[in-house]
Picture 1 (cartoon, helix red, strand yellow):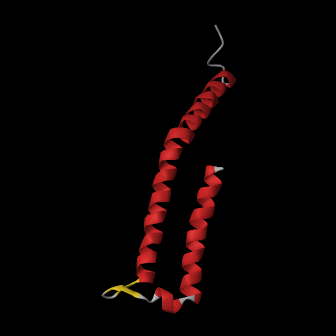
Picture 2 (picture 1 turned 90 degrees about the vertical axis):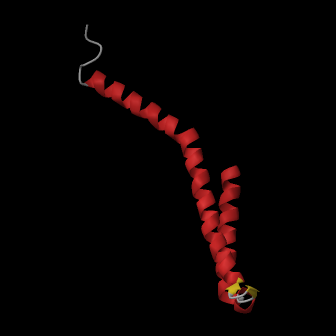
Picture 3 (picture 1 turned 90 degrees about the horizontal axis):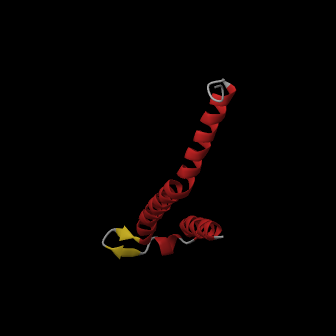
Length: 90
């Protein structure tokens, strides 16, 4: 459920940025500081949120997926050894 919420939030944030860029040009062109406008800040925010999402996925994969992959790799190696006759003959 938490993953679905994150997907909806990040896709909603991205779609909001796209639609604002297309339909709210005056709003996006609003000057914030000097030559920096709202569109530039939101665009940088897109990069930042993408980095945060990728970092979070790396943590999740290291904690949850990598141990499962190692377990499958070990089971596969053991099954292959049995099939090749290297184990179980005594």
